[in-house]
Length: 270
Image (cartoon, rainbow, N blue to C red; front, side, top):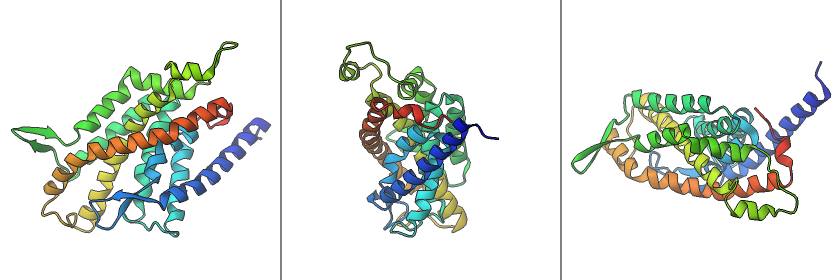
């Protein structure tokens, strides 16, 4: 038999899942910039809020809310592009950020590393890209993200976001934030970068699986897969940086509001 506290927790999780799934539908139908693998398709604003879903809902409920919102979005203006697997990149981002902020960084590292390995093992994946006289790994930025996730910086960022704020009597909360102690903007920026890179490599896996392995095609407008990846190689760092900054501008104020209102104490812990 469930204890009253456990029952309340289940109800709260169900309400959060339903309400934030509905909110994600709104973000899902808002187009942003073009998806170069599929002409006419666009990335959605849902990509910008995926880190926030991981922070607020955690590594299980966050991806679930994103998946439900994506499926509902299919019928209200955001049709599937990748055979219904469109929810996976944002869901993986939420899972990585959710694991990190719940003191499960080792699991986040394993998941991020596994995604990179799976991407590189697929038959259409690029290994190296020519940059002048040099050959650079296509996943160089993903390896930087993996190192960031393993670093004390990510551990500190996760701790700053997940713990409740405590203040000395008479001390200004805004002063504590502005001085950089538990600065939510820097913390969210670090975790959003890690999450959006996992999101990107997941998108690369889905692109190859659906377009290459399923339909036996190359992305439209490109003679070979290597040509496509070479183009994306120069584009994706700017694309990921843009998503990281916008995601931070959305998520950091939400984190501040949750902590000031003490609602952060009621969020899912797992």
